[in-house]
Amino acid sequence: LCTTVAFPIPFQTICALLGLDYADRDAFAKLGSDRFDATNGGAAAFGAVSDQRKFLFEAVARQRKDPGPGLIGQIVRDEGDAITDFDLAGLADGIFTGGYETTAGMIALGTMVLLRDRKHADLMRNGSEDDIDRIVEELLRYLAVVQVAFPRFAKRDMMLFGQQVKAGDVILTSLNGANRDASSAGERPEEFDPHRVPASGHLAFGHGIHRCIGAELARMELRIALPRLFRRFPDLTVAKPQEELTFRQLSFVFGVDELPVTF
Image 1 (cartoon, rainbow, N blue to C red):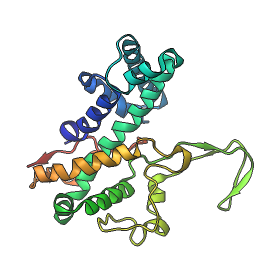
Image 2 (image 1 turned 60 degrees about the vertical axis):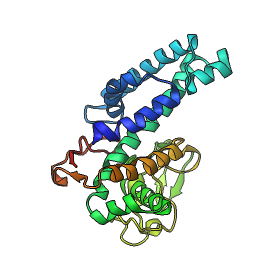
Image 3 (image 1 turned 90 degrees about the vertical axis):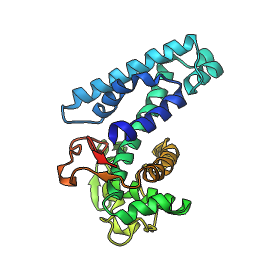
Image 4 (image 1 turned 135 degrees about the vertical axis):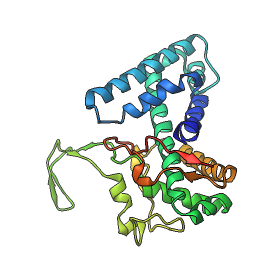
């Protein structure tokens, strides 16, 4: 399911949005996973970041000469030389990075979670728009595939929730830990509940000025893809016990390496 459904949907969407060639999907699939994976150390992750930015820089340079139909081409037409290739490639990299690896993980893991209980899959298949919206929000809360927020650096000494923080200290926030706090999620926060109406919003997309810019696009893709997947394949079943699946252990973006299914 990962290679045939979960990855192609957000990847094609981002390619269409930016005006990039879908033929490069295999190379990008590898780079997208590697840039968030700390298994082989920081050098490997930063190498993947560098390779992806190089690819996008070359794409921007081509569209500078022949602007395409997507966002990159439109910015070139609108802004011309007011925006450099370097800045435009960085913008495209941010959109590309935030727009496909995380959503691909959510589609695969969300399918796995819903198939644990046939009633949950049936509700996604046959439920109303309100049901689907609520299930998607619960999946986002429960899975929180981006596990750690961007680091913050203290500008001054302070006491934060009873802890001494000194100027220059790095502060990391566990988003999945925050999403399983009973004060916001309600009763049994460790459980997936498709009927949950949380006391406050989840933090799967972060919060404040650094909230994920692709949040609404991700929501839209999940609301469209998951019900249609279950309607198209009503007898969809995970082909392996969950304990036999391989999950990413040292990645900032949680995911499953493969999700074999039968239908």
